[in-house]
Image (tube, rainbow, N blue to C red; front, side):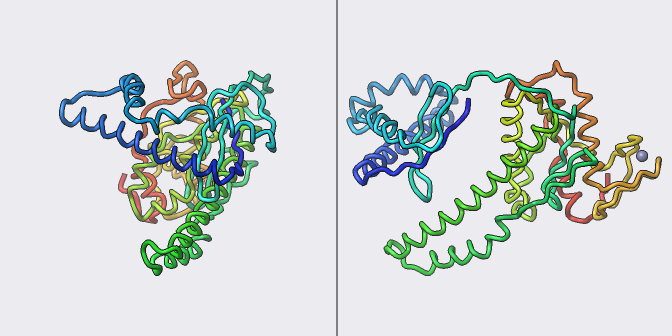
Length: 344
Ligand SMILES: [Zn+2]
């Protein structure tokens, strides 16, 4: 499946219809969530989507506003899309209308025909995500991917916009305007980050057949507020999702490996060095290897990726292989970037 997204220029009348639908659908969503919560808390029952789907005809009898939500406006949208910038290849499966800070968008999920894909020039790579660099590859020929830090750069600007919102009186028109401006600024950062992730994911997929990444528990890491800002800014989770998506499209494999000790084990001899993690240069006491800490970790990740048998595929996506659940990721991230010595 591939998504095509187009900006809409709906008339005021259509916008009013979209707004009313959005309100009704939000209400439905919240009610459905509440039903699930109540069923679980009160009766310890799980309610499935199908259980809720079955109730829809009755709900529509009571709520004509919900019943009116039909394909009509979608058809309108489809007509308008005939001015579209990119042609859709394949069969349209779903159509979603979405409101973002700068307007309305329509997104089509399309089932694409299978394409023949060529094998990548290099068999495998390990990718180590970090804070100093966005990512480092095991390939000695590849320079580390620098972190663009859009959010940090835009932070000052966002703070100003935020202060403007708080200064203005609640419920005033001027406050609403300031809120819209703030939302647009956030949206810009989000899009820049996403573009960066797509660009880097495309590069990876064009060069390497099998891509090994750590199975990181990013949500766990974001809970630590010292690191949260950098981690959210870097958006590794999104990056890895995009790599998986691009890999699948290009016939590549993504392997998620156990992240424990990848920064401590020597990539040449396997000896576990208790290194000072504030230091950037990894020195092996066993074989005298001297290498950048992140490059060493990327090489360990690549080696682990190769060791994962190709039969142990997970069900999550057809191209993902894994050698176990995420482990020790929070500790590792803390140890690597706080500059403190590890006690492991
Ligand atoms: Zn060594």
